[in-house]
Length: 213
Image (cartoon, rainbow, N blue to C red; front, side, top):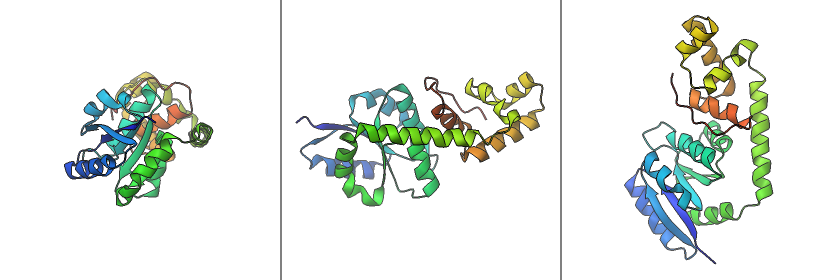
């Protein structure tokens, strides 16, 4: 049986070394690469079967979740989020982004088992989880007002709040308030995360939108 190739995306050298040693003891696992930045990870992730993704690569920015979303937009990828963060909302956001599993760093000794579980997971179950996420997203979008929904196509096109106001002939302050309401209703922290939820409910997952707040 061929070994499972694993990419570790981790900016803490102590954790990177510890996980590397752990995986090296498993005959069926191979740590193919270690990336400490999103740019490094995007260059090599297609060579791996499984990606171990640190949730916070730069402080507490949750940029590991954004990187996971970017990988999944490009191609199907099995991603395990690895982090010390345990807040329920963040864990649910990770799964909604498309992560296959979420492992606390306190439980890192279970990683070999988790990698095998994700690698050989039932495809039908993965599709069921994705469908559930899509339906939950559609329910969230249903809470938006017509005025808020009017902003969505312009958000997806990458327009700033000021440009959106100009196109819709609305005051900049009005657009900012409506954008704030959208973030609150979708239970996200940034426009990037909002766009991920919007895209999950649609078939278009091809464009990476930069946050221009």
